[in-house]
Length: 64
Image 1 (cartoon, helix red, strand yellow):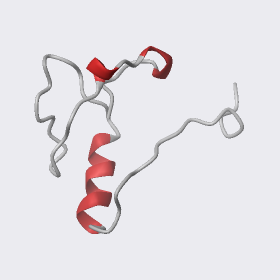
Image 2 (image 1 turned 120 degrees about the horizontal axis):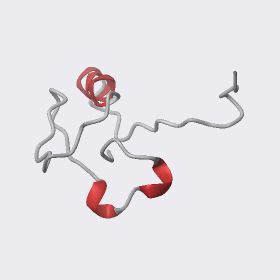
Image 3 (image 1 turned 60 degrees about the horizontal axis):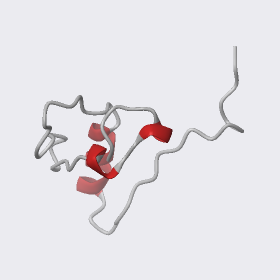
């Protein structure tokens, strides 16, 4: 998962590895993202799941 940064700004260096307790393996001083804990819960509950996709689709987001 990438660190907490705007999606269009993510580079390979921004990708962080997490363990199943939602802890960054090597945070390198970067702020972890809040969805790491929900992703970890999915992986713990469903070992058959190989990937989790989190998306903010413009068709689902409504502006105020």
